[in-house]
Image (cartoon, rainbow, N blue to C red; front, side, top):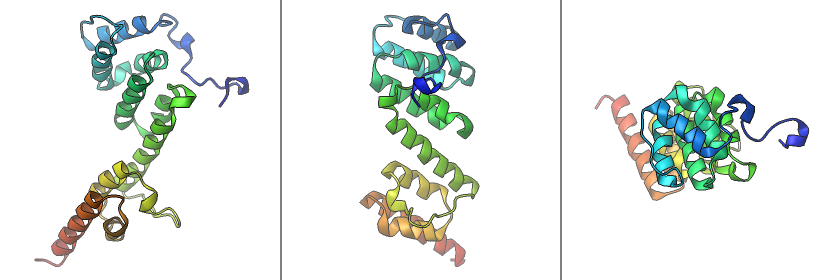
Length: 184
């Protein structure tokens, strides 16, 4: 939403007032994850710090502040993509919103894909009419076929998967399931 509507597109910088500059936020992250930092003008150096912080939930607030200040959109988007897979579903959109609005599409799509994977893993996924697996990203199709035990869904992936790899893996998994249920 636009800021004029009362919603900020980035985390509130006042929540970490000491981090108004990217370097300050990254130095604090590095301290928290126990990594010595070198030249923070290098996105490679910042990337190493971000990667470590993704694995430390206690650093995520500072990490998201750093992402909101990150000058390289590709680095910021990559950090958020990694983080989404580690975060609880209820907090994923906070990570997406750390990105500038013009750079959120991929992260928002990944968050939606992860919600489908969560539902497949816990058995709550319900195949919606008109929203077949052909609307899923290749990434989601590959991961989804590993997480489902639904033969109908696997059959759909085997016939309508986006790539030969998806179709082949789904068909193989379906054969294994059928073989296992027939007692062979």
